[in-house]
Amino acid sequence: MPLGRELPQLLKQRLFHKGRKFDFEVNRLRLPNKSEGEWECIRHPGGALAVPVTNEGKLVLVRQYRFAVQGRILEFPAGTLERNEDPQETVRREIEEETGYSAQKWRKLGEFFLAPGYSDEIIYAFLAQDLEKLETPPKQDEDEDIETVLMTPEELEAAILQGEPVDAKSIASFFLARPFL
Image 1 (tube, rainbow, N blue to C red):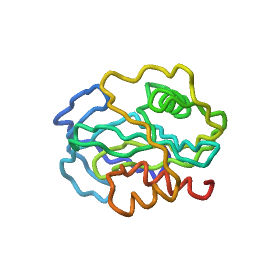
Image 2: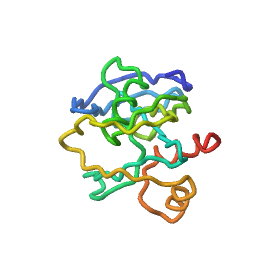
Image 3: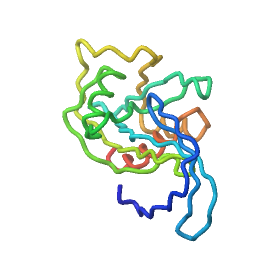
Image 4: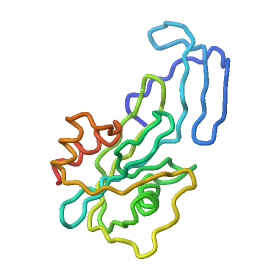
């Protein structure tokens, strides 16, 4: 991604772990400002997210159990990009699996780094409109514990401002979508 790329010099790779969804590495680097040190980084293939809107103007979200935070978080449907997969293909699959809806109209909202202090993950955000409820939704992944939630944009904004657990990618994407809602 061309968002201001300026590569550091790799001096030594100290640790590398290949995981199921992402890789983890610890490297000794020389940064562009000539500073040297060890930095940890999660290497992630990226994710795609949909802000689905029903014809009645309701947002389709999921309340999903997340083991890392030991609780349920309100999120827009999203998923990890498969190798060489187009982000829109990813999000089309994920919206169907996670919510049971398909979208006929798509608009790219933008892309952004999720946590650039320790990860190279990029989120590709889309607005999904003209939704149709699927008669037979695809089966969810075995590890997914998801409840579909419909909210108005005002209800979601209130939930965010009141501190309900909502993940950062959903908050950012909601505000990118706000002018179109």
